[in-house]
View 1 (spheres, rainbow, N blue to C red):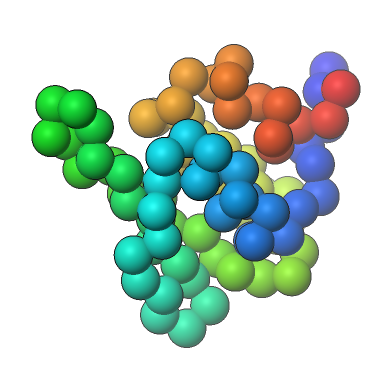
View 2 (cartoon, rainbow, N blue to C red):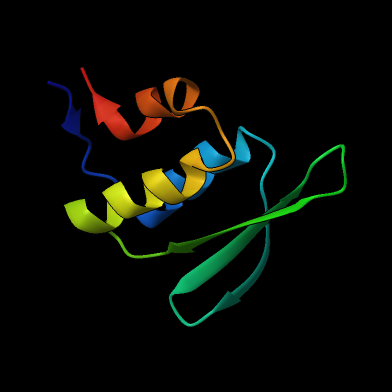
Length: 81
């Protein structure tokens, strides 16, 4: 079973940017990333910018992003083999 990677908030943001998300604002230690689909749908993901994300936070972030990005494409960035 693949293990969740230990990652920082900036690594998570970099992974989501590969899928077209742009950081539009930051308040405190949380960054808001947005992507607009071709159909005009606004997709928002909030990422804590901590130096190391807790495993539960990283898992929740994966689930949140998987609503918009196919999990198979997203998995290599969040899970180690």
